[in-house]
Amino acid sequence: MGLRTMTFKIIFHPEAAKEISKLDNRLKILVLKQIKKLSISPSLGNEFGSRQGLTLSGYRKLYADKKKIRIVYRIEDEKILVKIIAVGKREGLAVYQNAFKRT
Image 1 (cartoon, one colour):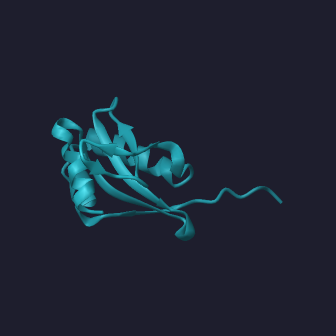
Image 2 (cartoon, helix red, strand yellow):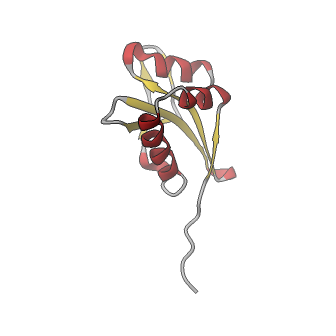
Image 3 (tube, one colour):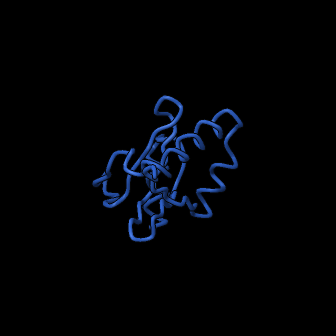
């Protein structure tokens, strides 16, 4: 009997799903490939702390497209779940501000 890898279910905040749908196809593919990795390795992204007054403790970020796109997410171990909170460019910290509003 082989070892079975635990996979985490991925869910999206409705606004994060809209952000992904607005990306061009090339970026959408890159972002979704990164998100797919989270189902097997949810701790792949870097932990957040506080950033310019936005407290996102307990959240993580993962990069796509050579760090141009941020994926902000939270791991819910007890539910074996990864929740994607926000997706977007870092410019003006907009992606982090959106994530903060959705917490």
